[in-house]
Amino acid sequence: MVDFVVCYDQPGSMENAYQRKYVKYSSHGRILFLVVGSLGSWYPKNDEIRSILEINGKSWGAFRFKARLAAIQGSMDMVCAHFHHGAPNPEAEDNPPLPVVTPYPVD
Image (tube, rainbow, N blue to C red):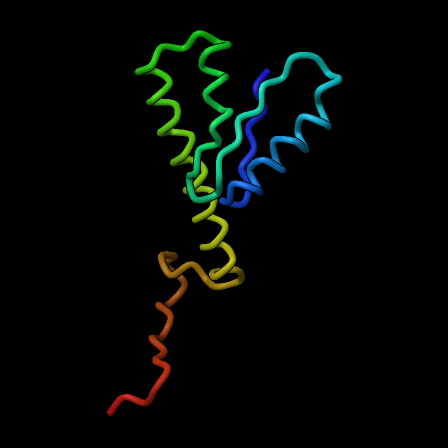
């Protein structure tokens, strides 16, 4: 089994995420941990999975790209949800567009 984790995008955070998963699940059998940073950083130990599962280089490269992109997209979705929490959907027919607010008076 492969457990996928997205964590804060720093080397120390990625190592901590890997270690937490290892401590939590190591007694459950053989579980591989795939760690990706929230901004798309790739944890070097992830490449051990390729060797263990005998995945060819081209397929692994495509997977690596998609995994990193998914982490970035998830991070962006959370940021957008945070900034738009409770705001009406401007694309809905019954919601008028939101007014443009500037931080300074416009003449």
